[in-house]
Amino acid sequence: MPSRIGGQLIPPGTRSPTLIGAKTYTPVATYPSKSDPTKDYTVCEVNDGTLSCDCPGWTRRNPSSGRTCRHTEDYDNLLSLDKSKPKVAEFFDAAVERVAVPDSSNGEKGGSLTELLENLEKEGL
Image (cartoon, rainbow, N blue to C red; front, side, top):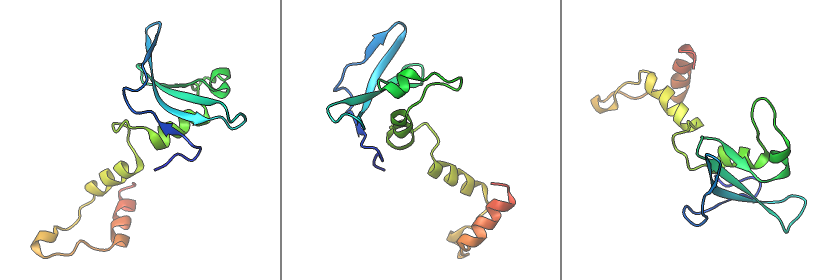
């Protein structure tokens, strides 16, 4: 799925990570500035599992829930290559696996999508 705000992934290995203190910042995506077409902002994956960005929104905010900006949110939701994070499709697949569906190899039909969704609802998913 493409970025909604113009983000572009940085190919792995094309930009060197930066070590600051005990943290390593690896550039993973760039985003054009909304207000200045000559500027780009860089999203980095940090070795502690967080994301960072060099935009004013990220650098100036520090809410108790953790720093974020539209670039880190876009990267995390749309561009992230981290397949270990659960995505909606993976959640749906896991939910479907928990519902008993007749085996089609023995000639039984799998049922309709409506029946499947009703079964999911009964299980509270």
